[in-house]
Length: 507
Image (cartoon, rainbow, N blue to C red; front, top):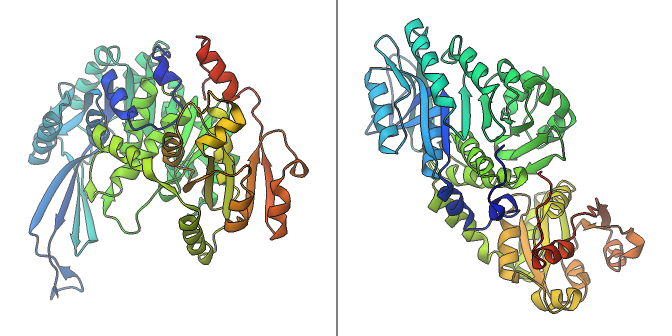
């Protein structure tokens, strides 16, 4: 990945609302190469069945087209502020012309596109009525013209050397077959340390020789790599974490991110700790391409040297934005900033929180409560909160009020106000609710909420905690999580105040 030349980004550990704009200002050059698709969304009323077959008749009154596949990744990168070039093969048909028109209108450089009269531009048309997709029909080339492959391969060498990052989107249609793959592998294998390579492929194994910085298989693709079935549901995360080394070996990547749609994502790095994100899905949706948005935001963040775990949380936030949009859409800088800003006023009172918890318990969900100052967010905090989330279903974080922090830490603290601390913590995908308490201990809050699990991080034992008796009195359980001694907020604040390097090792 690129060197951390920007301290305010390379040390950024939380999702502040200003972050998307700051990333956009970097304007990195990113090449997206692979399978370009034109997505169609056609809709209209349906009030009768056709006479020749038991099939509904849809009277199409709306036709919308959007770039999909690698083109959607490029569109999202452009919307987030990157300087984007796209390389691939399209036809000179109407679909190819529309796809290119929309890319150019979004500011994407299409000079590396290979257009060929014998190529059929891949299209995926969805037919819907009343908000329900009834049918999708795909049209694609049976065989990629050999001449087009040769032309695309010839354009690759000069293109990749000028990029801060290269995203390979291989959907196994043949666009990235030889000789294109050989040129990409040959040139990117000799890349410098400042060039990021991301592989988003149906089968990442042919790209393993690249040793990509990131590989981003979805759950089905991960299942094929593991040669096992991954059933739906949150247990998939545990399975892929258990087989993390096998996924790293199969992809050759320095880190693998498995996307699990409604269940978020799992990060498995070759060195360091695993990391989870949790999606905020919508109940009903007609959205497509959230994975492309995720890859785009992840690539942008890593190109700007944002820590890997923070990059993952930012990418999850961008994906959460687009799943609330119908069709194939993009997440732009302003919208992502507004989404993160929306967490600024999300701290609930204890009474409001109690009402939410009752609803979750009626659904059979277990509540985990933890508390702390969380003043200057660092790796120890995010690791600890991710561990806490995995103890149950709903994670509640109780923040010490500003007065409470001053009593605990001294007159110079907190560095960040409780409103700012709440906004950053609430934006983490693993956190479901944030509240604030002003008492010496969280015991009154514990007695009101009665969480199934009370989690605490540090070098404690349950017997050392004043809260243990209150938790066990109603049948709850105290869980002590990992203590990351080198990640002291107090030590970090002292380094900052003394003008020392506050950077911490990459994760």
